[in-house]
Image (cartoon, rainbow, N blue to C red; front, side):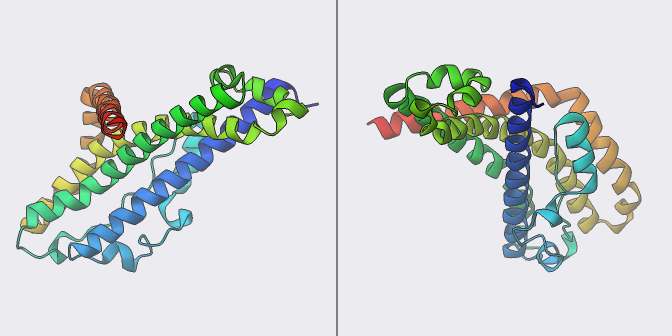
Length: 238
């Protein structure tokens, strides 16, 4: 027999999985399209320009999710030599900043959504605050006639805060990974001899930056998200 705790864990895992798959696929698709716009259609030709999770999610992501409840997604291939020389550095920055910007935007939207569902629930469905703090309450309330009609809103509130956390995490990770990938791609495009050092730099460079600056970068991403959300709230409130 499945207990209340088991049901809570199943719901939370499903929401996490969907949030990771959707966020990674959307960010990767947009990055591939930006890369094409900047002159390199390699990723689009390989299918990364399609909103297809099976392209953007690797088998290792499934393993990571099963063990650690985390996915990182597959970096899109970029042929630096195909990018026109005019404003080359700017084009590389545009390509490799797309994922970070996408995840930050998704996190901000999710934060706004969470506030909206919390406010709506506090006004129209008493008890929403407790539900959003402890999803187990949702399982019990969903079986009652009084709260059953609000279960979907509760679920959206929980999903919003999960989306916020996941995209803040992915934004910080992609800032590190795509900085290294962008640097390697640019150097290889400028100097073919650099390719012999490319793979070690991409692997160990990412790991080193994660170890040294991972916490600071994730904290900075979270601060940026809250700052953007506050500024937008102020502008919308005027």
